[in-house]
Length: 245
Length: 245
Image (cartoon, rainbow over all chains, first blue to last red; front, top):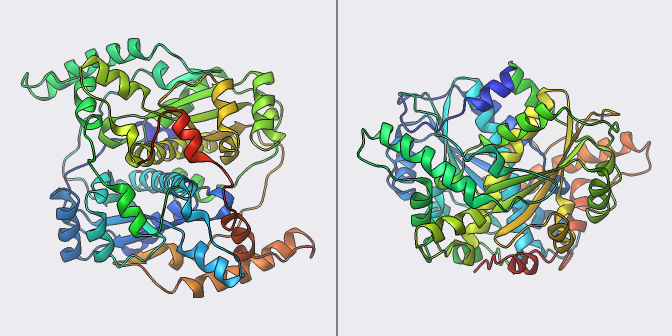
């Protein structure tokens, strides 16, 4: 098709890296790409903290659920929702600052951070790097915030590891396209699509584990979605002055 | 550099479109690209409703803040956070379904929707299309939900217009790179960077408006962030059974 589409369609998460740093100009280029993503009202509520220090990466690796590859990979980017700049802008112009009292700051900031991260992922993969988002940054927000000296009105929402892949991984099958691609209105036949996908995933797991696991998507995801209070994001955000009312 | 990086760095929002449909295979390809973005725990909590029907696009155009170009452009994609499939998976496996009671569902879904949308934006622009995200989909969630027949546990979080550009637009300057690219820890010198950026934006606005406006970033964004209750996202989400506790 073209390099962009090929890069996107060839995506897979990499969880095995060489212990090797990225050249400085690539770090900068990747953040430039992230920064070019659209942003609501040009608010640009995203700050990216690049961690390359080995000791700090090792600490993050522990904090994000003991994922050892985080310490090995070249760089860990902490993507933060950032309304501290908005607060300063309101102070500078003698305006009240209200947005972080409401859920809308979280929604806007989180969405814009997602846009920014995906630009970085696609750019990094086009340069031959492997990547994987680290949702585990939400496991212990307090410790991450302390480690990275993050102020009020800023919240680390997702990490991204970028590095030189040691091993390739397989492309995991996705839900049938018709499940996520609806036309003109929402398609209520989702249970049929889930059943189809569960069969695909059963076969995929069987092959990947030499018959040891046949766990399908419904079984896997329901173990995540049934858990109460898995992460106290609300409290962690309140500590940073995001009130989500 | 390469086509991926060039496409990303050359991004601008397009708000003027030819009244012309996209070929069917491109609609599908764009959604395939969006679907390839990473997703937390492979939950894939994103559904994309493509609206090409002219009457429906016109209604969305009104609902999203009377932005006429929405009706003109080839397609409006409503990106929805979707935990309805997660609910069905829990029912199928006899598990409790809890995640939408907590803020984490909103954070995860919104972030994953952002990742997905940016893949679509980059893919669309690589094919020569113009794009612009439509945050105005949050202005009247209830009406959008009704129009697109969206069920509980699903919430339209952002729209995306894709079409054939009628006019090009300028690339808007962004915050200084050092503001958003921090190293090892958060950089507290943000006020200095804002002052720099405000000067850049004053000049940019002066040029773009032939001297009519000199409004800088701080002035513009504080008018957005000072408003209380601009959008009742929390209530709208509760109506769809997202409780954000």
